[in-house]
Image (cartoon, rainbow, N blue to C red; front, top):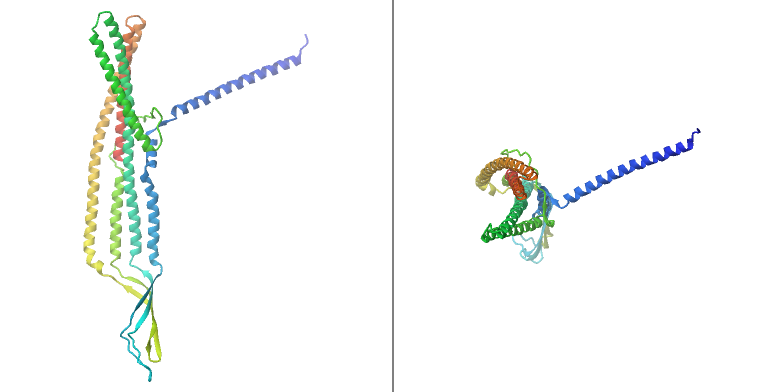
Length: 444
């Protein structure tokens, strides 16, 4: 039987093409699935805001943050002006007046001249500082210290925004959890209302029983309406603080419950503020010390008279002076002792303010630690309750499948499991809120 090599070769090529096409389609479908999964994940996370992003956006959006650049520019120009103290200082004055006191030297046969006639006097003075006792350097240090103090004050004000954002963020999460609890409760009331309505129709219950359920339904609706408006108000304030609108409904990302190191180390910006206030006092003390020293410089002085003063055959119309100048204002010596006492008192006031702040902050941290421990234990108990509720529901599922329990009983147990689960979520949010409150109080 002849072997048809061409047919065999064609068959192998065809089979290879089919295998290649199959492999290509598998890779195509796999890539498409991965792409759509990533796209779906991105869509789910789109519009969700984390608490850290809200804090950063609120800080950037707060108008006070513009003060940082303004302080830098002001400091730059002020220091530049202070550096100009070592540039030559030129002053020019013109006086119209009478010069008296010069002797008169009249030539023989000339008319008598008077030195007290009206004259135009020009005074020019040039000063070049060589050493100013360190005043310029101390002044620049004071300018920089004042700028750092102003920045520290702004940091304290901006840090308070973090607490406001935390309260709004967790307020919305808590409202969402409470709304879900109310919806579960409302569903349970609706189911009970249906059962009682059937019982009323069959004469097994009173109509007043149904009215009581309807009142509870209205109360639940009122509570959900109130929570909805509260959430809307919180969302609008949070949107205004971060400078962008929130999705409707607002989708906030609940932080992960992780380990938190409960140490008592405090890193609040107020501590930097106190340190900068102390540096400001030190800079002022340096300026006061500089005022005790003399100033050394070069002096050029010229006086020009028009008309000049006659001295016989000659005429004096200018007086020029140049040399080394030393000036010393001893007023600072009288005040030096009191200035030192004032500096000590100012430092003591700042130290007292810092100690008071640390005392109050440590009290807040201790209280928050106790609340964290409380919610931690409550969460553990709620987890146990939820586990038991889940086992009970599963048992009723088996009973329903075997015809031992009714659908209503199964729905009640499912509702109880949902309520236990929602209670756990609510406690977890409360625990997270205390975690961020601890972070805010400690500055960590």
